[in-house]
Amino acid sequence: MSASALLPSGAAFVAGVMNSVAGGGSFLSFPALIAAGVAPISANATNSAALWVGNIGSARGYAPEVREHSHLLAPVLAVSIVGSLAGAVLLIRTPAPIFERMIPWLLLIATVTFLASPLLRRPVRQAPRHALWQLAAQFLVAVYGGYFGAGMGIMMLAILSFTGFPTFNAANAVKNVLSVAINGVSLVPFIIARIIDWRAAAPMAILALLGGYAGAHLFRRLPSAYGRATVITIGIVMTIVFFRR
Figure: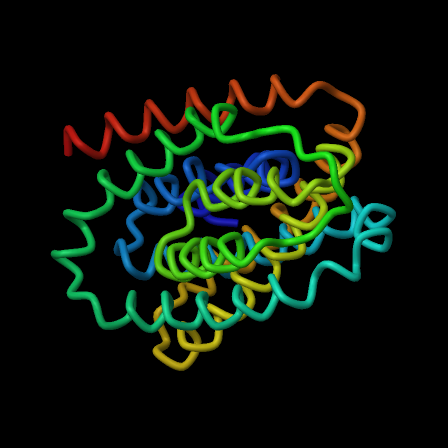
């Protein structure tokens, strides 16, 4: 592994761990690709490819919760697939200079959403189900996920908090399955457009997979506050860095 690949590969492992519990891994892995010299749009596509594999590891780590609530997956998976495809096509058609100027604002939106997410959660005393507004909101998040994705996980957790899942782990398990779908579908137009840097994506994918699986097992046993504090810190730092650039 070349020296230039070490930074994004190491970041991918930590991102896999972070995404398994709350999301925000792209706050670390995407800037690492930029720092390694990958062009912004290619870095975004490469990051999606690598973290998609990590999402699979995370979903596998929450297999019991996924099986228990599998009957709720179909509608949110459907809107996620359509939204992700739309977002990925939008990214490909966005001129590189415009996307570069949008990066700090996208990071800021994701960071603020992450910070505000506890205020969005309300206790729901009913059998778990998705309201129509949640499906609409999930579609928009999937568009964002196909286009950029940083902070997508916590946005989905905020939406799923109104579904009525009995535990945080249950909502997190569904979130991880949706992340697999969103990042996986977005890869199709990215591959067709040949904007993925596979030299960086391959080692990142392996380490993201290991991180996702390890994180799922670890954070199922630890308070989510630890992961949340890490994501918030990274989000604030990266937002400041990209605004200064």
